[in-house]
Image 1 (cartoon, rainbow, N blue to C red):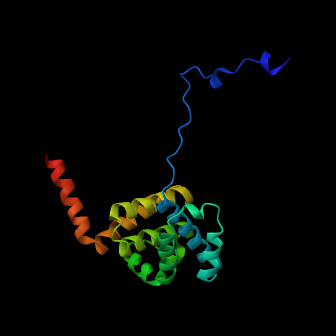
Image 2: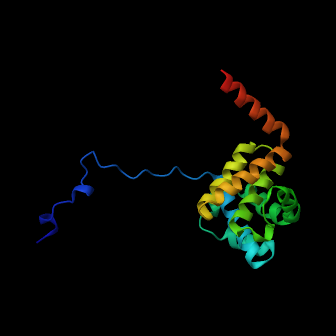
Image 3: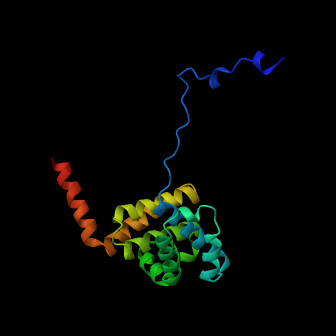
Length: 176
C-alpha cells in the first residue's frame, strides 16, 4: 500500500473544525534580556565565576542579538554588583534565608527587585509580572506565586507612591 492508500486520520484532517496550534507572540527584546540575565544570574550563583566570564558566555547564546543588550547589561551586572543589597531588601519579605531559595527564584527576585529599584521607566506591575513570567518559564511548579508575593510586598517599600496611586485608582474604578 502506498501513502495515498492510507486515509488521513480524523484528528489530523483539515476539516475546519480541528483547532490549529496557537503560536506564542514573539518575545520582546526586554523579555529576552531578562531571560538571559536570569540565566546568567543562575550560572553565577552555581559557579561563582566572574561576571565578565558569565557575560561572555551569555553573549554567545543564539538569541542574544535579539535582546535589549543595555537592559541585559544593567540587570546582569547590576544584580551581581548589588546582590547583598538586594538580598537585604528581600529579607523582611522572605520566610527563609536567601541561601535556601531555589537559584531560579532567587535570580527572578533579583531581576524584579533590580527593576523596581533602578528602572523607574518600568511600571512596578510590569517588573513584578516579568519576574513572575521568568519563574513560570524556568522555575518550579509554584515558584511564581512565591516570587509574586515577595515582590508585591517589596514594591510597596521601594515605590510606595506608585503602588498607592495604583491601589487608589483600582478602588475608584471598583466604586463606579
